[in-house]
Length: 306
Image (tube, rainbow, N blue to C red; front, side, top):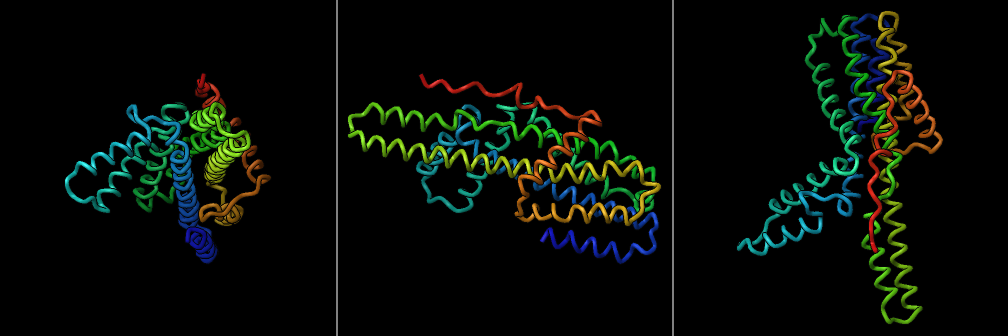
């Protein structure tokens, strides 16, 4: 649906591009900004999805993890005295899930979490600014240039999240339970062949778990890079607003078209992702907003299973 809206927007802008007036340029910029908003929301949602795949094993919530919270909910259901309902289960489990997600980066990567929170607030502020500007004011060059600090802040958050998120290792705590099981199998008195089979099954589950988390992590990085690319292209052209034509903006949005697939589940090739990563990192460094230490300075300590 989002991809159809994207292509429909380009067609509509082409139909009005004959005049080439400031109003039409502003409408084109609004359309480009909408694409940035959609891609940023998608990136934030991908982080939430990654968080939940990691959080049950990694993140403590008020001193308790997912197992503790689920156990506490089960006890409350048993002691409730009345049959539970779909509404109660939906609300209670949603609260647990959101709590785990909200604490996901905060405990392990506070610098990364700070970027995520400012991205959320910055996206909301930019969206409100675009929506609230009177039309006559929106079409002035001065108003367009006042959007620059907001665009720069959003690009800074997106680029730093994208570059640093790829550096997050699969956390040791995810392996703790499995390693404990393997050690237990090693010590029991079962036949060697049975122990080998049991350990083999545990190892396969570890590999599958790591692959799933890495896949979600790659989705996060891809989504962030796409949104950062949109923000970069808008930011680069704000200063040139006076000489920019509607066709220039349409050329930019046509270049974005292949990236729009990612908003509806499409995937970028490894080569494309690496190209975007280099482009975003280079531009972020040029304008002085790149920080590659958001993960390395705060990597969690290895698990102790001795």
